[in-house]
Image 1 (tube, rainbow over the protein chains, first blue to last red):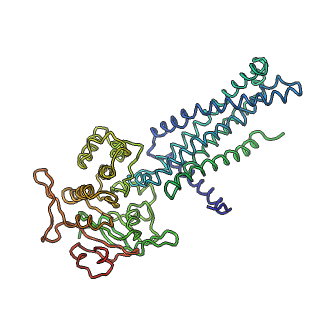
Image 2: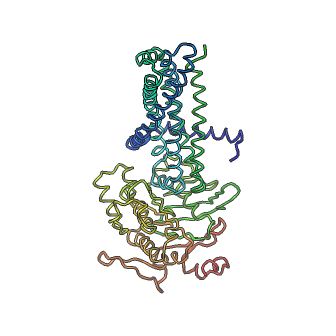
Image 3: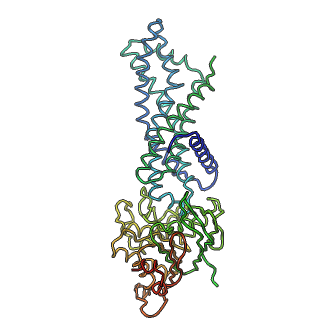
Length: 252
Length: 265
């Protein structure tokens, strides 16, 4: 499909429509608690390793980079503060979400896409189930609740990785690193840093479901939907990140 | 007159430029089996999807047990669909679930008690002769077995009417016969109303000319022979989105229409 303004508006409209239907559907019977738990396990627990690795490497590299810049001003002791703020406000939420867009968003799109292509979604409807409630709502709830938790994991491991590099590579005192990290953070940072993944998580799941459910054209279509879901979710994450950052931490 | 279980009135449907159904009207009465035949792309499968409410017609009305489903919301449609069992072309089994969970799906949705679910699942799998496959996943089954599980799944909710979308497509003659005999058994011994979509005339005529009798629990299949119209089956032929024939097989065979003659040849 060529990318035209009209197509873009249509896309946004479809996404909003799906999100609204899912939102309203989540308050009406029947509730699929088992499916929600299953998805939480698959999406949340299943992504812990990936998110830990992401956090560790990001925290470490951030420490390496910022320490050398700060050393130029004789402020090497503030490394912890800079790493903590960057991790909690930006890199933790954004990178964890991007990893989830790749791992979970694509998974959702390809799973639902395959179900469309093999008529399983139609079969589900034929058996009297609303696929929005049975498939979309559990995935949105699971991703939206799990991503903030995963972000906490990423942030914690990131700070640990930073500490490890600070102490063993850069020779910064561990207590200095941690206390400057602690001093640097405010409640706004922590809460804002948790609001972001909430929004990102919803975006990843809704985009994944939307791309999956509008799949057409066989196996090739499934591949296309999967790719589109990752691209669209990543762009949305970066876009919402800009907006949220502007709102939560208004420039002084 | 018996109230029709499914009725279409002047149904029109098109996809973009491509108009698939151009004003189709017919009725299916309780206990009857309607065989819808026609070439590829004549709108047969679309007809079933519309009747199931999976898609909406552009014009016309579709009534299931006198309820117009064309204006219904998805939420209300779910209730109507519970009355219908559908066997999809490629079975469309849920491949993440075992055969047991596939057949039990609708019962779970209705919140049926676990013991009853198990007994109904076994009963329906027994009917299609697949009780041994209960723990298997769809990927482990052959095409014919999948079709039979799909029939069992559709039957589990005790529907008032069954839709079969080319249930024998891609199957060998022996397996096809087994599927056809299941459908005949349902029609004659369990009085299940059916709509059977196919382009294979062989299957269509088997359905129209054979009937099942129960002899102390043993199901036997007999040919109609010279006794006309025992099998409660009517044909409906579609061509380019229009009905060009409606009636029993005896009349279809004697038709003078060039297209029908070619189709039957």
